[in-house]
Image (tube, rainbow, N blue to C red; front, side, top):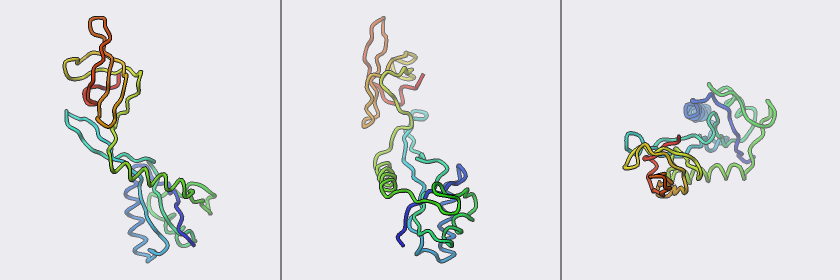
Length: 177
């Protein structure tokens, strides 16, 4: 049998703990041949805090762990009886269904691309009203015109002396109203 990807529902906030515990239990039971990768899909995000860029991790699917495994009674019981595991997603209670190869590949691609270039924690949309928090236009409100995620900059139309003026700012200089 080939290994397929299954989605395991874990207690929220304990995804990494469940991943580590599963890996330990697989090694302890000597079932490495039935299990492939066990992972929590995450991406790196960048946020501005106190004027400094800080990197952190954000989970794509909070509360879920992806497990590549060969499904049989022994492997099913090992996962099901792991502390803080609520069960499998998809299929029936006793016979979980794997996700499709296309879904698994899409998730894995997203994890790989997320590791290459961190995303900003706050996403801005054109037409959205924002407040400038630092720089010469501090305390002005403006409307987002363009967003450049590559350079972490946003173009905001600020009303100065009754005239709309486009101003280019860094993500850290604006916040959502």
